[in-house]
Amino acid sequence: MNQALAPASAGQQQRALWLSTFAFTVCFAVWMIFAIIGIQISKQLGLNDTQFGLLIATPVLTGSVIRVFLGIWSDQFGGRKVMTLVMLCGAVATWLLTYAQTYPQFLLAALFVGIAGGNFSVGVTYVSKWFPPEKQGTALGIFGAGNIGSAVTKLLAPMVMVAAGWMMVAKLWAVWLAVTAIVFYLFSKEDPSLEERRRSGVKPMPFAEQMAPLKNLQVWRFSLYYFFVFGGFVALALWLPHYLVGAYGMDVGTAGMLAACYSIPASLFRVVGGWLSDRIGARRVMYWTLGVSAVCTFILAYPDTRYVVQGVHGEITFHMAIGVTLFTVLVFVLGFFMSLGKAAVYKHIPVYYPQHVGAVGGVVGMIGGLGGFILPIVFGALNDVIGIWSSCFMLLFVLVSSALAWMHFAIRRMERRHFPQIDRETDLPEAIDAAVADGRRHG
Image 1 (cartoon, helix red, strand yellow):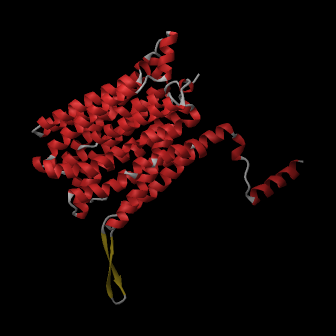
Image 2 (cartoon, rainbow, N blue to C red; image 1 turned 90 degrees about the horizontal axis):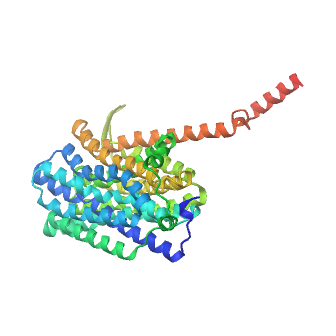
Image 3 (cartoon, rainbow, N blue to C red; image 1 turned 90 degrees about the vertical axis):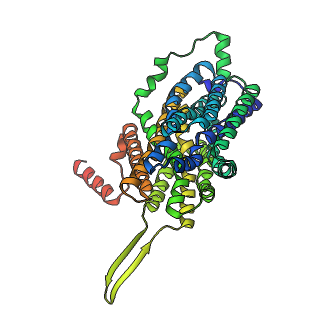
């Protein structure tokens, strides 16, 4: 039986959902802290773009890798305890960040700050167990909107950093996270499935059994989707302030505000993605997500270019470039559809793997998070090697196109397996006429 069907009142469900969402928002704000303070640290240390990309991506590595284990531990020991512990560890690591002085020390500190990012798989496991399957898409969409923490950091951290330096940002965010951990623990309850397991004396599912679904290629296909919709989101959330400063010559405050135009829709509309996944199906939402994202990244990938055409009366010069206004609109649209996709991916998991949400959700979250680690480093390397600012969007276009192609052919393969007549039936007139003629010959 699906553990999410354990009885719980509407009030208990809402308390678990909103406490978890707030906790995830704060954790995400801490997880993205280097998107802002990394700019000042980079100037302080004289880093190139590849080194900067590694610095801002390092917290994402930790938060991604530990998601698998945290998801499994949440299944075994309960999300309430695990989530509280994650936040307290993240708070301590963020405070200790202020003692770093050299580049290796900052990388080491960033690894520990990344613990806060592991909160996601804990929250998915915890929240999904309070709701029945037909409501899990909406509930997980609301929880996932905690990605808005990225925008909170982009809007508030620049003001604090300009006024008091990057160390004050780290200290304030650490205190904020610690207080949130205490509030969450005091007001939350253990999930219904854990309570039922304690009453019945049933032991937690063994580790090997929890990891069994990972043999399915489908899990890794979901992971590729999430590598783009979440990993790409995290990468751009980290990279855009730096991109806007370099490509458009903005100051860090303005760059942070415009980058928030991407982070806000890429977070808040995840709720809409969950609701749509419940109403029209997660597969349809994923088609829209990947299709529109491919169009947006293709346009954004186009570099600032000047053409000289030899005309009848001499040379004709064309200049093609994406201005700030069009860039902002495109990243807003990209963020919106990425947010729908993030919810749609996680709608699949409790439906296909109801008894393995922690393990499968943890692996999918880990792969997505690794996208947030790998992509900023590659963005920086592409800048250093190719020397074109829009090269990051070139890479994203290749990634989303690959995900769209794999999804489409996998779905077509499943359709042919379940409905073999699909290859024989067609509504094309010439095929119908041929079939009739063939029937007459053999009739």
